[in-house]
Length: 118
Image (cartoon, rainbow, N blue to C red; front, top):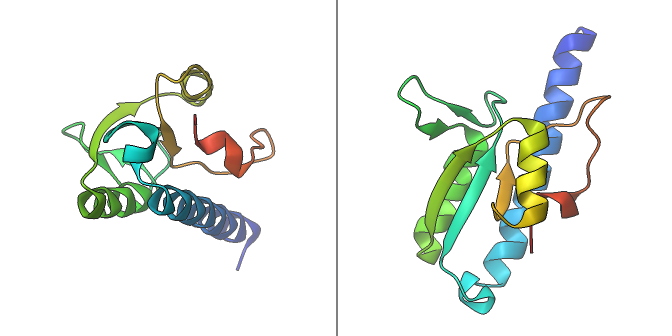
C-alpha cells in the first residue's frame, strides 16, 4: 500500500469514527431534548464520505448513515454544502447544527467537539 492510499484509508477511518461518535451522542439524547426535530447539516465535498451528486443532492457514507438515523429518530434534515472555513463559522454561530464529511489533513486539525454546535 503506497502512502497516498494509506493516507486516504486513515482519513476514511477517522471520519467514520467521528461520525459514529456523533451519531451515538445524538441518538442517546433525542433532539426533542434540545427543543428541535430539524437539523441543518453542513458538509464539504469529501468523496466518498460526503459530496453532492450531479443534481446537487447530498450523498456519501456519512450522509447515508445520518439519513438512516434521522429516519429512525423522526428528524428532518436540511443540507448545506459549504467550504471548510464557512462550515466551521456556520457551526460556531449555530447556523448549522452538525458538520459531516470531515477529514483530517496536515492543515486541518479538529476535535470531535468541533462537529456539533450544541
